Image (cartoon, rainbow, N blue to C red; front, side, top):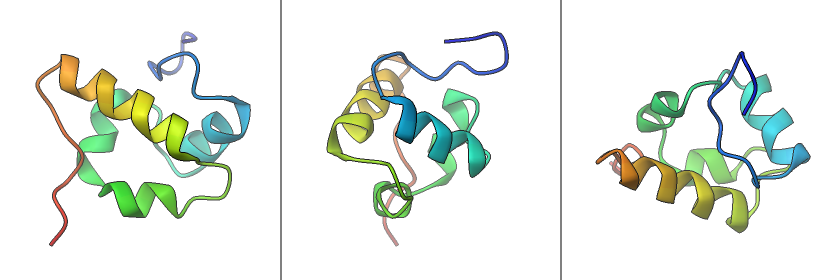
Amino acid sequence: MDDQTDLPSGIGKPATRAFTGAGYTRLEHFTRATEAELASLHGVGPKALRIIREALETRGQTFKPTD
């Protein structure tokens, strides 16, 4: 994590760039997107999504449910 984001470490540089470029700089931002929407971002793979999912779960949060 750095001073401007609270993204968990280990998601990788491509995923970090994809998430921050799309405006996902804070962990709570991920509750407003479905996992599929996030997976469609270039550079985001299953490992990054798993790490984000686990970080959300520790806070009692989840990705936005699929409609």
